[in-house]
Length: 237
Image (cartoon, rainbow, N blue to C red; front, side, top):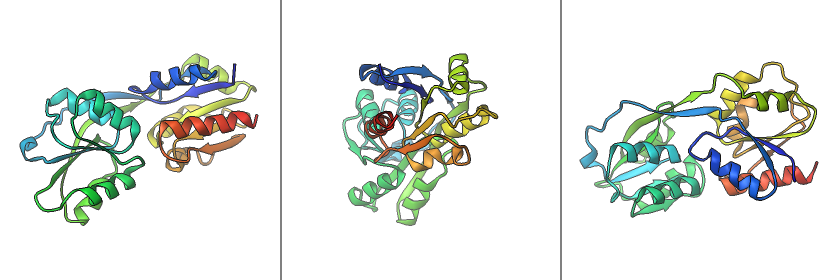
């Protein structure tokens, strides 16, 4: 058995990560830092939308809960979001295979400005960079905040015990918002024995001031590369 991993990823996806890590020999502790919650937002102009932009699997989930439209092109930020769109039944899925900047570039490459009405489906706390960048490029863009993510109010007891212990723990971070929620719950716990593994540099920024044994960042912001970064961390113990 390999080392122990603290999984902070929210659902949907948390259980998938846990099962994937079990299959390659890691023991896992579940500590989702965010919980999905629908908003009351409703589309006023859904019939005018020509393309959907998704920056998370939760965005796909939220859209699928309020609309049965599956014939619109679904531009997805990466593999996990694309898989969610496929599972939801979308017929046209374009995978940008990266982050928000890659999604923006993908849209600019593949979608004509004339006649396009894009809609970004996202967390209500989204920064708005996708909409702004595409509007500056001449696109008509709507933003639909269909869900929010609530921060956890406490750490599960197994997670708290492992964090307070001296045995090295791999802390897996999938998003900046998850890292912010974790930071708020860590208090004065000594994190120097543990390793921090993030899906991107941006995801780890909220924990920048905390001292860890080491930090590892995925080569690309997706689950496969995050697991590869975890395996690099494990090999150096």
